[in-house]
Image (cartoon, rainbow, N blue to C red; front, side, top):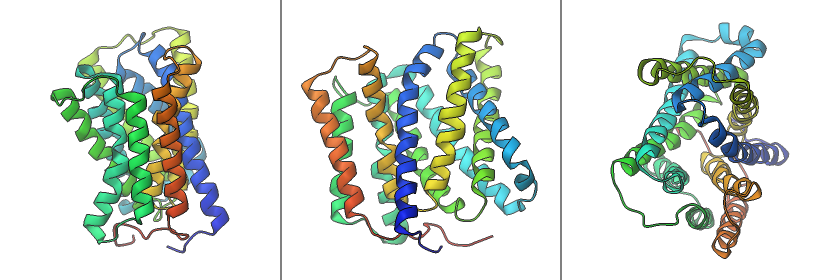
Length: 300
């Protein structure tokens, strides 16, 4: 891949950070929606709607994809679905804070997987930045003792799939159209979630207009907009930095929660914010001026 220009890379990283902010802000709406419908039904409605919206703009490109490109998109979608599925099931037997903290550990797994697969490890400054981000998110999300039971184990399995999603997406987005890839991964997630919902959850088909309005908003902002920014952004920056920037989702989820009065503003929270933002800045400044090579080899 031809390295992106500095301007393009900055725009890509800004887009990735914005995606994290959008997802973080969505948490308050998700909390509202969960009072009206079960989780997989919500995921199914949200991402199927996002897929249909994206398909309007990308259908002509989708039908021209090669069989291998279809396979790439489905693989990306399966990793995304697995991340959501294990996180959703895991939160049933663990606290939201611990679930969120364990999920954010994908920011550590991404450079670890890259190092094992390629022998190319991030610069020390990037690693220190990642540790600061994880520490900051830990202060923001974990209030009790961190112990490992079934819920925590399932959440960690989901975290592995979140990391794999970032890596596979980084590979696929350099080999096919961004709009098509965004559409298809959302479609895979949406359709599989609906299938699980109708088999195991037996949802009420019409939960009311207010929750459906929230579903529509999260589909557009947290689906179409955020996942397009993520997919395009990963074409122009490294998977490690992408993971760091998107981990800001947890930080902004707490900020929005505090703004709406769900969580109090505390010294612990302020320190957590400071560590997370300092770590993000350090990782960006310490990262290479050029885009990291694809983790996986081979082109269609």
